[in-house]
Image 1 (cartoon, helix red, strand yellow):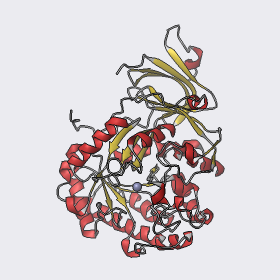
Image 2 (cartoon, helix red, strand yellow; image 1 turned 180 degrees about the vertical axis):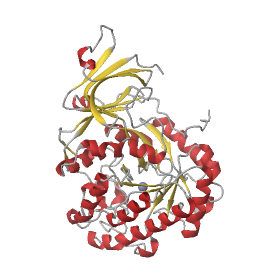
Image 3 (cartoon, rainbow, N blue to C red; image 1 turned 45 degrees about the vertical axis):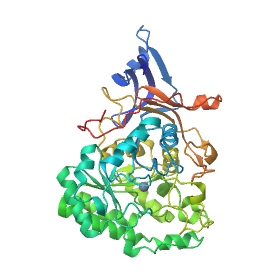
Image 4 (tube, rainbow, N blue to C red; image 1 turned 30 degrees about the horizontal axis):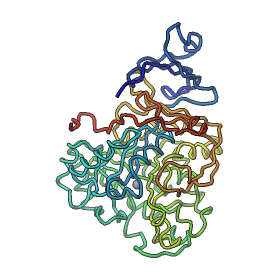
Length: 467
Ligand code: ZN
């Protein structure tokens, strides 16, 4: 594939080293080769050379390409729910240039090295952004995680309660400890869906009442599971990450564990930070996810966890399905598929809520960049720095956008964000120095995605890619 010629980007507000600075970025062969900071970038914009220069308007910020370490692509096996092409188009349009795909809901699940090989082939055919992979730790593969680790997964996901698909079983307490011990020995990391099955209502119909659904998955179920996880981390030293925290009452235990020095991190999602149970109409199953979206007071406390640094990352947990499955049971919250489709609107949605709370964009950005990169152990992404890949995003924080689910890039026109007006908008994204999304082209009636770039199919650092 021909490489773009060298070019430069000049921006008044480039997010570099945790601050907005005026800067010129020189880019060659997909890499940021030089950064010129401060006023000099504007005083000597061209230096008389013939380099093409892209000027970022002053009403927009230049960000590192965003990182989303929690995405369910579902291909192969359930590609009719979501596939690499549609998911990565949505990612690019949301300014996300690196995703890490979850090991379940696609089939076969990524619990063996063979399954990972198939997954990588699928991703290689149709991805518009870089894709990395989580493996799964399930009762059947404990003791053999090394093969999947050696094949290049970033870490292992487990459930403590039923996962929603039969082929991906959950771990009991004893199995959790075994997994933690094994993963510690590999130098890998564990990521946990933490709900305590003993405190969840059983499977099956629940009715259309959102309140009924909320009561079926109470805060105690998360709190109890998270205490179990923390106990396991203390005993084994396993580097562990709590996925999609919804229950803010678990934050004190997480704060205490971090203060104790345990290797624990935690993420939450835009839907927990922006939507509240009080607003969800009965039967509106597009809002169903597990753990559930809780009340407004809970949301306030989650924001405290963002501001005080307890929460490490904000990720989409993008988990779409077909419209039929999402509407299964005609709005019965027990029967509908649980998962929110929001990969494309995450930063804009979170920023809208942050702004209304007087929280600056600078507080939120690490949770979309360096935070999730660290959760997955991704090297070289989530920062604008010399020698790093030129994954970049232009975000206009004051440009409103109304979400229309029909126009989102993911496969099916259903989203919890449909109809919401958001306070900011992604205008453009570069991957390896090539434009992968340009909103201006979309407005001109052209495809906003220029062409399929050579996405990288990231493996762990030090893992050789099979030919
Ligand atoms: Zn998930």
